[in-house]
Length: 152
Length: 92
Image 1 (cartoon, helix red, strand yellow):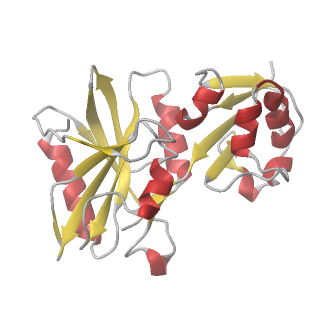
Image 2: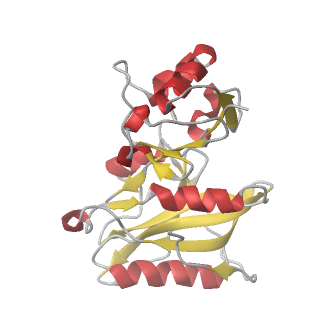
Image 3: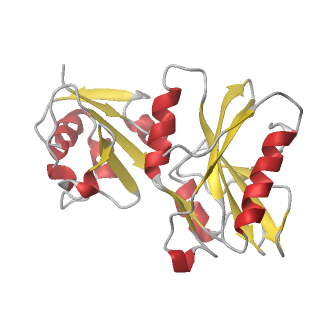
């Protein structure tokens, strides 16, 4: 679940960087069976410049820094997001190589079509050896949440 | 106190669910090898048979990426923190 403002932030980010792929971290917490996203942290796409229209890479240092800041809190990195410019919002073969490294983590993918971002779809793998990711429902509900830039 | 190694979620099933482990050693490679005595599968998942760090894994010592230091030969001291972060990437 994420708040409308967070969804707007995510969609604005991936639309802004179109036709390149946009990416970022999702911070939040588990509430029973649900993941509540409390922060959307847009990150630079640090893939090679000539590949950024079809590939994304998040600097692992950003993940490290966020994990350190969240240590001892109830929050953690609960997911990642990225865009598929003019392509379907389901995990590609390339995505799956990395989804397997982050099981039990939500992967939100948003299609950006002609510069307009579509609502993201969410995918989830139960374990690293899982055959295929399953789709999660993305619920958008109002709450006061924070927006923050990707930490260096 | 030894070197603290923070374990990513994907590898915790190989460390009995533990988020961090402690081991001794004077380099990152020695610390991993020490952990491998008890957690062989964990060691196999982070290093190759020739003793190199596996692709798609990033290792930091106190926040510094070992690729920009001496890789697995990067020196460590008691109290240092070694973090393993799987890569996050993909593409359409």
